[in-house]
Image (cartoon, rainbow over all chains, first blue to last red; front, side, top):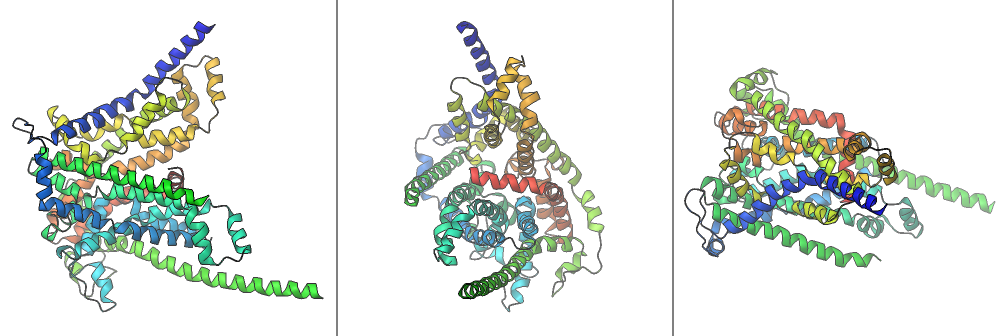
Amino acid sequence: MKAEKSKLYRKEGLYGYLFIAAPVIGFLIFSMIPVAYSSYAAFTDWDGLSQMNFIGLENFKALLHDEYFHKAMFNTIFLMIGIPIGIILSLLLAMGLNRGIWATSTFRVIYYIPVISSIAAIAILWQWAFNGDYGLINQFLGYFGIEGPNWLSDKDTVKPGLILMTVWKGLGYTMLLYLAAIQSVPKTYYEAAKLDGANAFQIFRHITLPMVKPVTFFIVVTSIIGGAQVFTEINIMTPTGGPEYSSATVVFYIWEKAFGNFQLGYASAMAMVLGIFIFVVTLIQFKINEKTSYDMD
Amino acid sequence: MEATFAKNKEKVKHTSERKTKRIADIVIFALLSVGAFIMVAPLLWMVTTSLKEREDVFAIPPTWIPDPIQFTKYFEIWEKGPLLSGITNSLTVALSVTIIGTFTSSLAAFAFSKLRFKWKNQLFLLLLASMMIPYPVVMIPQFIIFSNIGWVDTLLPLIVPGLFGNVIMIFFIRQYLTSIPNAIIEAAKIDGCSYFQIYYRIVLPLIKPAIAAQFILWFMAIWNDYLAPILYLNSPERQTLQLVIANFNASYAIQSDYPLIMAASVVALLPMLIVFIIFQKQIIESVAISGVKG
């Protein structure tokens, strides 16, 4: 009886491994090996053609003095200003939609359209919208008597322009997450607060905001991971990295170095720095989240 | 007497509260409408630009309704660039990845959720951890691997990795499967079903809603992908749709043929827009769930 059972278990285990084989093998080939290889290549002068030589920390030392890398890093972080803007706007939108007013589901669909649209098409559209003379944005500003700049060819306006576009594109997604979170808050909480004489702001501050905190955390974490990897819109809207390299992101620079200059070792070092940056920032956020979660009890 | 007075007072308070709520609702509705207009205005502008003549684009002040409305650009785009092959390439990649990848992902999710074997949770965590690895970190070695086996400038580097499954999909289907009682699986075992039969005959029909939503989201992600295609695809006729329209943009902006560019972009947007309109309920629901659970 016992032998029978253990045989059954072994069979189950065998099928278990068989069924998960594809993703596990895929993980080994397409994530594990490349990461290991990349970690090694970061310490070499790899150019894809001649022999790879181990050069120690040379690439990382060079990064410390690479002005373009510093610019790309700065730009990448600067563009993340869009994240808090998007969060505030979408939370307001979600609260508006939560009142159960007319055409709520229509609004939801409309706000979500930019989210499902391809980033390539959106980037093309906005490049045209940012055109200094004939673009939609300056036309709109013109109604208020403001003469808009030539957004994408001015180093001071190219990043704000990109932020504007990013917020516009991502708003619907964040709003949807917030709306779902707000709708899952038990109604009794609000009723109790009203009975206690809380005003609208107090209700927002002490009920809505804490209740949507897990979603805010999720949005911040995923937006920073995504924001650290911006590439497509830069590649399409400012193919050279913008005036004075003012819109180039880290991934854009990695791409240029790796596939334009074939400095594969150097690009790998940059990719490592980017990966570690993302990992550390995410880790810090998880730690902060853990700490502040106690306050709720 | 006293009681009715209090009741009346309460009623008055109630109606005035209702009135302020109503005013607030109207104000919010107006604000939301303005916001909705801002969301669609650029897209509408894209459509009207595509219907203009080349010179009309530079009219000052710009016109919203083209005069004359002309659809010629929508015929021209098919000859001026490899738009058709772009669509078939994108479809080839997206369909083969999502169909086979959904099979491998759901099979793995079933095993992770319902079968018993050693290191199960550790392996699952390992897969989850791989989601933390950003694509730029793996793209250079991956490119070298694929170029060594001669796959550059083919669709294979875009297809093959996806066939091994998608961790996000595994995660959500596994989550969904926890709501399905183990007793069903045990009963099937006693009835003599093989493990694959259990997956195919019992589990698969039960998880269809979860699969459908994840399938659409994954399809959209592949359809809209840009970085991987730009690394691998050089020949115009091998490129995916997103690259084709980006090249339209790069080459025809110099001739300032914006209607042509916008027409191509509208064509690139349209398929996903239609998919979204049809499946909006499922898409919106599954996205909303992802935030609450994740």
